[in-house]
Length: 130
Image (cartoon, rainbow, N blue to C red; front, side):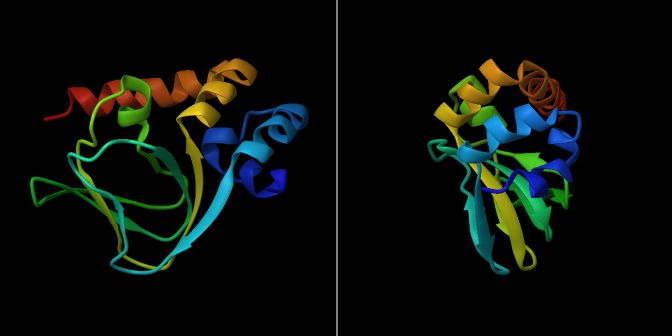
């Protein structure tokens, strides 16, 4: 993946040019359409997602929990905590996403630990929320 689109995402905005170049090979861009299930509650976790464009709905036990949009990310709990998915996430519009798997996220942590610290801080907030 080209590093330039990553620069526009808040999660990666503070990375140096070199860090972005090291991250880019591990990131993949994905396009999905409205109604596409991105994450299924109770399923095993294989990917972490960052929204470049579009919106998604988060549902827990079928109840609306949140809406996500550009710059938001999800899927971190299952990858960092090795837990099953805690919610469904469904595309509400056409979406462009950046995805990474567990191994990519680990490599990111070695190269850019501040990004994983940011992700972990959000994870703790989400786990503490009702």
